Image (cartoon, rainbow, N blue to C red; front, side, top):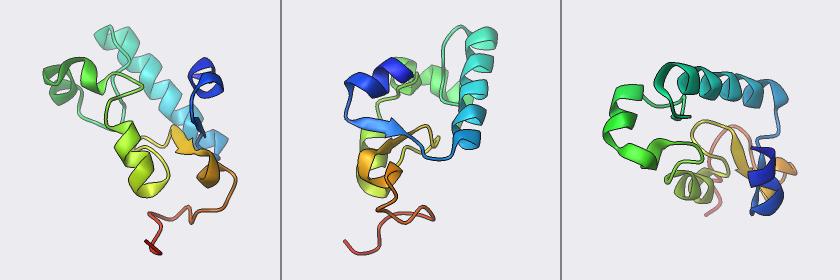
Length: 94
């Protein structure tokens, strides 16, 4: 995750306990299912969607564009992580 963040346009979600829980879920899915399926989605439906739901998942770009962070709360826009966005949900000013 760290290398993805270092070379990409996103930061980690700004609450370490949240990202730690997501990472625990990813590790669990890797051990149980052989891939790092997003822990915020049902594993069986994620398997049916193939690589699309393996972290970093395909939908995370749209999630971050829409609300400042991905649905799993692992990745966030740099602006959101810096505190310029409301952490309670999507930016209502658009």
